[in-house]
Image 1 (cartoon, one colour):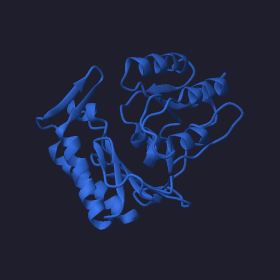
Image 2 (cartoon, rainbow, N blue to C red):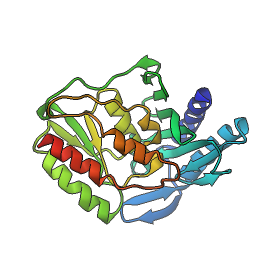
Image 3 (cartoon, helix red, strand yellow):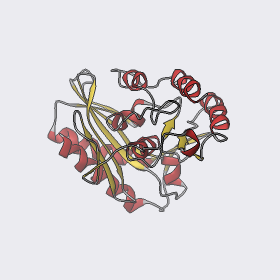
Length: 255
């Protein structure tokens, strides 16, 4: 199943890379988001590859669901995380695929087709980047940290996330807002970022990244969100969830 996830991610990534910086067909537009036909095409490709190999499995993705969602095996897919970046020609986006077995994430891959970087994780094993083991940053001081803060897509989530950005920007080395939740989590896992925080995200945004989580403890600073965040996010049937409690936890920790 791990190999199937990686192969599907590479196939979808190839499709995205070949069509990057070409004129895109827009499916829908919101104030702070865009949906493209290429999103749908990438998910259909992933679904075809996975469900042909595992016909009794289900797929739960940003672009729709396929199969019996009560199946013990459920693939959770974001075929193009960073659609707005993709549409505007910004080379920062990825494919995210996770497998949930009995409500627990057991396989996760995140693939950046522009940089040819593949993060892979399996339950009980060390996460890897292009086959090499990875670990989080060893930075322990908040003042040395580089933190990614997502603003999400709605007025409500922007109003929730922006005050955190305002607080953190004066306390860390740098804050980044890069537009791909899955890559943000992957960057924390391999030590590029020290933390990633966002409210209003969806399960497909973080499912694969959940396997790459690591927690680095010090008196003042943790590198990633707590286990409560992931247990709530990975709960069967969750579509969206409010991480306000995690944001409040982080602010208290850094106070």
